[in-house]
Structure formats: structure tokens, C-alpha cells
Image (tube, rainbow, N blue to C red; front, side):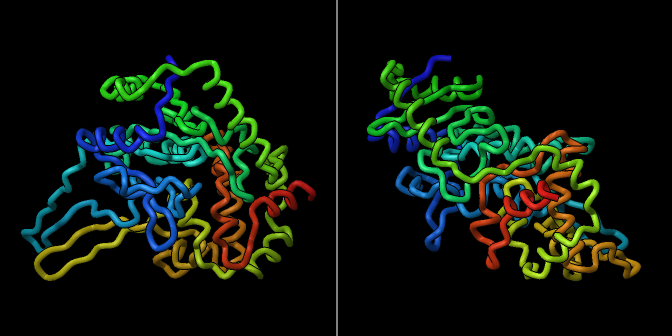
Length: 339
């Protein structure tokens, strides 16, 4: 498909046009952080942040979501929730967050196809935004990815100065661009070279690496290693690493009701909490924080690769950036590799 460019000054016009036909989500500044929210006009969004604090999984797998309502009692009934059927655009998604759906999709589109996730996922158009200046804890290149990767998006925008280089990747993207084609021009040789320069400099800026060679086999042999105890001593069990991880997907079901009506609600949960694995009989297979710290690492770097043939980490660095006690997943995997 032909690569295009759009002048930076025309980007607001493009956003205002697509909001008329689509529900558009984009990074919005909120309390000095950035988060993906529905926008009504271009001036609502803020593209200055590299990564929104909460990843885009929150659009498809909501933090709190009503699954159905019910009327209790012998004559009670269940009232299903109407699923969304509106096409929507995720504008400004970074390549690492787009890649997270290669891990979320097997969970919600596997043996059981979750209708709440898929009703939104199937209608989504991803417009990616390359990372010109990765942050210190970014390590997406450790997963054969790139800060300018177009693998998991429908369209990729790359800021090349006074214009954006636009790579149209899928038929979805081509259909969308076709509706607003007048805003774009064909990319010149200089534009292509400028995009390549952004890619080269962005990759060079990523200095942190995670060596995954043989990690699955090494984890198989160190289930009772002191590393998990030493890491757990530092951990305070707050769950930030899981809530802000673009691939974590633990949830709990809660029934909330009055005497006359009720609802079953799905809410985010965390494997870092002792209640998460507490059995009805009172037994807890992961009673100590060490068990939970170890499980989180094993889930991402052992169980998920074995079950889905992909490591459940994108290298976004959020768990490192926001951990209040500075636990570093790159350092943990490095110690595993040294064992």
C-alpha cells in the first residue's frame, strides 16, 4: 500500500473529521498523567506523553464492566447487556501497546470467546504513533519489536518534523484513509528517509535490554530459588505492576444487588493480592508474597510462552517506572539468566 504524509497542521482537521463518523479514543492529559479516553475534538488529546499511564487494554477489557443485570427471587430473570456495535478508532497507540493484543487476544478469543471484549476489539481501528524518543526503561527491542513497528496496527503515523509519515498497513486502514484522502499527499523519497532516520535514532536510544535466551528452561529449574524470597522482601504487594501492565488480565466477578435488582460485574483483579487465589474452603495455594511474586514472573516468562508461544511482556517499562519500591523486571530476568 502507498505510503503517505500529512502536514502536522492538518492533523487536528483529520481528527475532527473522523470523530464525526467514529468513536475516537486518544491520549488525554488527566491529573498530570496521560490516559486513553474518548474525545470529541482534536484539542482534547495530548500526544506529548510517550505512554499513557493506563494502557489501551482498558478500552476493550474495562476496569469495571457490567455483564448482566438480574431480578432476584423465585420469579427473577436475567437482563442481558446490549453489546456495543460502533466502529471506533484508537489514535496514538504506541507499537508496544498494540503488540499487547497478541497476548490478550488468545485469552479473550480462545476456547471461550468473550463477547464483551470482542464486541469492541472486532470494531476497532488502530492508528499507531511511532516513538521518536523512547524513555529510559523502554525495552521493546528485546522482543524483536521496534518503537516504529507497524506489525500490529492498521495505520502507523511517524512524526518527521513538520509532517507525519503515514504507513497504511491493512484494509481497515486503507478504507479509513480513503474517506479523508484529500488531507494526505504521497510520501517522497526524502519523507521515507526521514522516517528511517527516526526509526534508527529511536532504536539506538533504547539502551536497556532483556536477554530471554533459555529463560523458559531456566525457570523450570529454579521454582524454589532464593531469588523469589529476596524479591518478595522488597515488594509491598500494591498490584501497580499488574494494573498498569498492558498484558495482565486477571479479573474477579462480583454480584451487587438490592432486594429488587442486581448486577454481575467484572472488575480488574491482581495475582499480587492474597485474596485472588483464596479458595472457598479457606485454602490458599499462594499464601505468601514470595509465591505471588514468583507466579507473576512465571506467568509472563514461562507459562504464557508454553501455552501461547509468546512472552507476555511488551517491554513498555510501566512496571519499572511506577513501582514504588523500584523492583525491576529486567534485573529479575537477568538474575534468572545468570543462575
